[in-house]
Amino acid sequence: MAARHPLPGHYTAQSPPARPRLEKRSKPESGGARRSVGLSLITGAADNDPSAIGTYAAAGARFGPSFLWAAPVAFPMMIAVVYLSSKLGLVGGEGLFAKIRTHYSRWILYPALIGVLISNTIEAGADLGGMAAALGLLIPVRTEWLVVGTTFVILTLQCLGSYTLIRNTFRWLALALLAYIGSAALARPDWAAVLKGTLIPAIHFNREFLQLLVAVIGTSLSAYLYTWQSNMEVEEAIAHGHAGAPGRRDVTDRELRRARWDTIAGMLFASIVMYFIILSTGSTLFPAGKTEISTAAEAAQALRPLAGDAAGLLFAIGVVAVGFLAVPVMTIGAAYDLAQTFGWKNGLYAKPSEAKKFYAAIFAITLAGMSMNFFGINPIKALIWAGIVQGLLTPPLMLLIMLMTNNKAIVGGRVNSRAMNVLGWITTIATFAASIGLLITWIA
Image 1 (cartoon, helix red, strand yellow):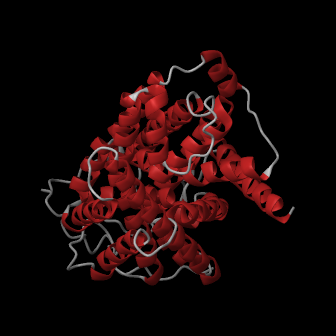
Image 2: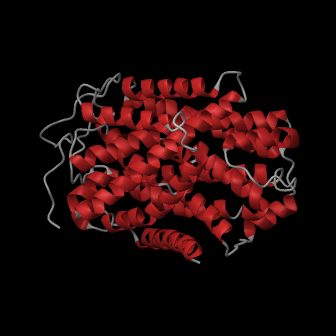
Image 3: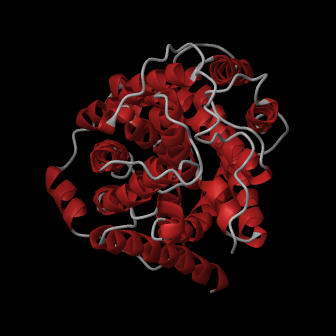
């Protein structure tokens, strides 16, 4: 399909971007120094949002240590998803939905947008409720007030903070997920069962298992990761003095290597956290027969009498801290997608007065998510459907990313290597297989 004109709000080499807020700009840096370290750490931490924590905790509680294999199996797939999204932003100079709008039919663009808006909004709302429930275990304040308070703090950070401030804040918040390693250690696991569950996959061909498996895939390979990572590369280029022009080709081998190793480190962190969350509940709740866990807050509460107050406290702290990171990733990511679909100016480098529709979308999506907690919508049931939508949306988006990163019209000579293509196509096939398996169980 013929390429369309560049999107409004994206700058060309002849029209340099506005200066980022709250950040002094110096002479543009060269080579690999253009990219900050730790972008994928933020993405990996956001991947383990409160709803993902609840999903992993539910898997551990229901199937015990026998589900631990899912973390190392998901690890290379997470690398493929995030690195290819990173590469798309680095080389192409635009976010995912900007590229879909330019190179693909509206029949592909609009359904993808609808799926992302629905799933991101529901998941953000469920995460706000999950954060409030976890905070309620720490401080004696009504849940409704905690939901409003956390939403206000998040909106303030999104609308008034610079991209650099948001990035650096998120990197520190990501470290809170290390609490789950301590929580798992306090659970006193059976190491023989842990080793077996890690090395020998236990697969059950029934609806309950496949639903959890697709939910795990949907949360570990969530669609919002693609959007966030590709757009953060564009924001990084602008923050370091380089125009985020469509069709950017001046990416060095050093930059791509740095992005690749940063992705490996960030996804290793995410998969380790996933592993220890499953281990925490699989070593305590599963043996005790407490197999029905719906939220991360329920898991934290249930861990207390079995693994001690310290384990429950660490679990709850992790939920709250990562929620402050993950909710903005979802809401800003959905706003990127909406803005790029309709050609609005977008980017955290711009002030709200310069990108009114983009920031209005962030505000509206965040408030829509918050409202789920006040109008009788069951956030747990909604979260299940959001996870399923994410799981069903992941395969076609991964397919598009594979096609785009192998398209010379988009990435020039930086098409995927043979090894990355093998890993990327395995990931794409695996996500399609899991989704088809779930659909078969519904039909059956």
